[in-house]
Amino acid sequence: MDLNLRSAPGPIDSGIGASAPPVIRVVVADDHALMRHGLRQVLDGEDGVEVVAEATDVASAVEAVRRSAPHVLVLGLYLPAGSRRELITKLRGRTGQTQIVIMAMHHQPAFARQALASGALGFVLKDRADSDLPAAVSAAARGQQYLSPPLAERLAAAQPDEHR
Image (cartoon, one colour):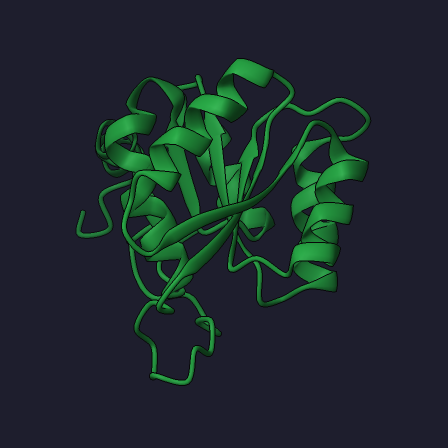
């Protein structure tokens, strides 16, 4: 699988080409209230970003996306009542315009590979959310992939050398 950071098909159509929309609408889904509130503070503190809803499980995340039509869904890796792969696939099939950024504590490249293969555009490490999440949301809104730098380095190191 090609894990180079590149533009993904179908950036959000904001009427101004492939640039980010004037206000990026975001839904935050995580099973921990403190994490949701912290992510909301990080994102609401950014110019041009508005958190429009929060969700605590798969069903409420699907409903929040349906109701709010956000540009980006920030999704905790594990949510009650469903798997991340199931949710990513379900959301990508129903609302192709909502891009997905995964938040996780796991530094293992396999988790990021699985999320990207399921249709997510971003993977941010929770311990770097304050510095990486705004960039990931902005990139996803433009239809571009984003990985927290330490994870991107691990993924690049794990890639087989194609020139041998």
